[in-house]
Picture 1 (tube, rainbow, N blue to C red):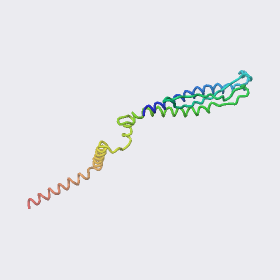
Picture 2 (tube, helix red, strand yellow):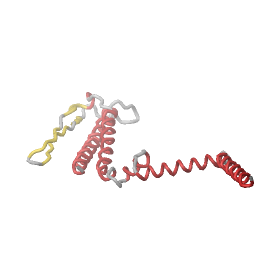
Picture 3 (cartoon, one colour):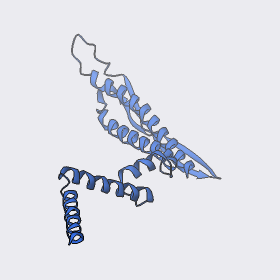
Length: 181
């Protein structure tokens, strides 16, 4: 089970690295397409210079018990800088954020079998935050109930205790009167 999580984590990490490399290329491409319109004193890029941007497509498959990857690098644009269409890096930033979130989820899942097993940190945290009917919790509930009852009696001025004491006194006085008679 842990191996499957680690395999998924490794694949997610590779995807993040590929997206980072592609992002670097997209930033350079975006810089070239933006600086073609700069005004003085900044130099504009040469309008007839060539620029080329390749995409990345990785296909994964399993063969003979091993995972294989085949990369394809389709051309996004190849031509003169003057004619190049703009490509804002925000498009790729969204993909990078999603990939980073998934990578973090995979990292958490790698330790999940140990964290959620009895005695693990997440398991103990769950026990503390939920009411699981175990013997220990039942004893704790009884103790808390008794403590609340005692606190209530003290706060009420021990009305119930005074009544009992008066009742005992009356009974004692009654018995003494009967004994005399």
